[in-house]
Length: 248
Length: 248
Image 1 (tube, rainbow over the protein chains, first blue to last red):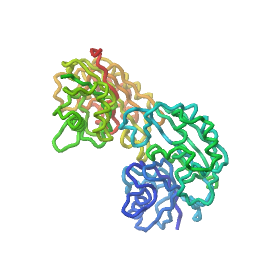
Image 2 (tube, chains in turn brown, purple):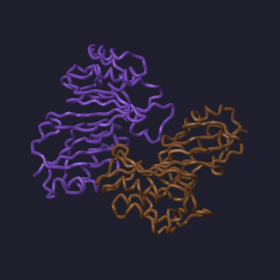
Image 3 (cartoon, chains in turn cyan, red):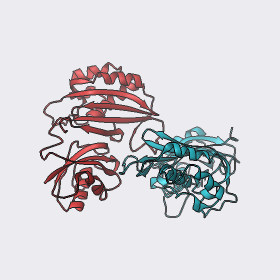
Image 4 (spheres, rainbow over the protein chains, first blue to last red):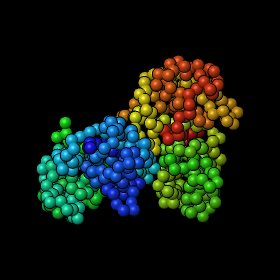
């Protein structure tokens, strides 16, 4: 029995999130089904990050165990044969049989993509959020700076969270132009439920001039969800990648 | 009665092209339907470019006549209210009642977008073509240079064409990197049926090393469709914009 590690990319628009749910289309469900068709084995992949409905992935991670003799590096091509167009395995390799992508240290990077326009852009609508008013990117970037480091992110967490602690560490948080788009990029060791989307909603309030950049510091210190901005729409969010420092 | 000019953007993936066809979903059909719902008038918009099934638009153009009193510049917002998410009016204005977007001089710009990967990228699949092998962009750009100017583009035209002449003028043709993508960009005064996709297919043959850049010159001079490369897939093509030099 070998444990196979997969990096997975997906357009989250037509998925009901990562996690298997009855009657709903999920990325995990498509992976389980494809591996079953390929190997004949009933597998339940273990995902690193259970992204929400509508959120995209460029480098989410899943592992599964198999008796198949397919070379680990070839699994990606074999599984892709059975996957729909909106999900794709972009890397496969063997890992230690006790490697669990949620029970080990990891560094995740997310991007929240925004375009400013008074009308819908059909070619961006699936992967970026349309903001109807101008945003001050410099102020948003200044505000993002307050989030870097170890903090209690309770204000930036969905109140329904089941997390034992709301303390998390962000290694970086920045806001920049990417051609005509505005990108919020955050890297950290674990994120709370809806945390990046609440950060995005709060930084957009700063960008619109509704709040000063230093307001973000007050929100952090207040540890109260009602102080932060709204949860930004899922379509703008992409899990860019996950690093596992302990993995070779 | 006023003639209203619209710039129209669309994700062509789920359309059976621009032109109205019975039983099929078309961009033109969605525009006619939206305007009917808005004004109550039975209109048939006149399009500048009848893009194929799967081809995208950022700035295609359509005109229609109306008795409505909606200010010309506000039509875009009003029509968008009735349009599906994959098509959007990005500009509206009044033009002379005899302006016809196909019966006047125009300059069109197309881009053909390619990503090189051995696996499908779910976030690019709708708007870029996946090439499984490396492409030499410098050689493609050199080859594209032979296309600039007035030429008989018969070799780069679908044999089913109804065009009276296959002579066309390209003002520019270049191939360049855009982040990880490769973009073929052509600007010209009118294009033959499938011309940009046959140019893209031929330039990719050069990029793969199957042909030398100078081969493109021989293809042009041979005026024979069988000399050129294959018609590249529709998904990579976007009509970027159309200029009308005679329009204010």
